[in-house]
Image 1: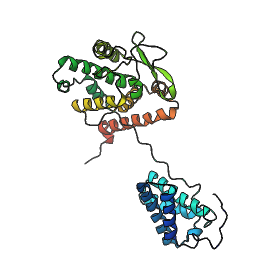
Image 2: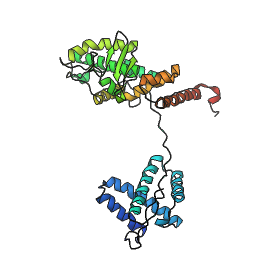
Image 3: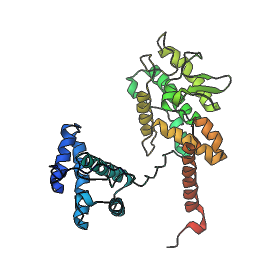
Image 4: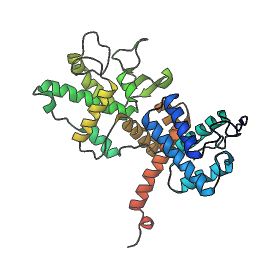
Length: 330
């Protein structure tokens, strides 16, 4: 709780009723803080809620105590306001009282120390094993290559190899895009086919080795001759565009999205979904959380633990669908 000096009775802000005090603070936010209109609207909405609560409880602006603010927050939460919205609301209230303290209107900030409930972390979305297989085994329509069958084959080999590495190794899209053809100190990442291992540069510039499975190695072996026909002479990237330059993460996302639609998958597929699928399917088979942490390159195992919830969700659905005791009687 932050205390400030009480201002003199002649302070013009202190003499203002609540609506005028709020308008003066909004003017401060617009003129001095230069907030955008959308932000100002959010602040105004937060102050309207505050004014309504104060009027309902017949409490003056300078008489609000922490237990009042805590109760109002609980009431709003019970009324359906989510953690994120509550956090924004508390931030607006806290800023208003901080400003009022600077104006000498209040002697304490009743919102200091209050925190919104923690928002539940959404579970990552993963493909089923069958969906992942369908995506990898799909053969693309050559129509987008404008009648060039050789180019169609090359792009199909590239895209299939991309899917195999994203799903088979759990790579981030930036790690995949950064792979080079040849290993070296200047390379961000590369694949040692003989060792069956990929070296990638992850978050925090941390390098890690990831095993590369048989299917991904076969896809890589098929892609390399096609790459030689596309890549510019001085291009080090493993994955290149039809113009011979390094494939960017956004281009990979676009190709993957189109491939998933063509394969008939019922959901939007992005590269990180294949990483989620990699982790989820490994845990379903092995339950070795520490190994999955190492493969994903997570610094903290709590980041990996979310996949145990996803794995339990999968098991719960299997139970609900198959176990006689899980089926409700009509």
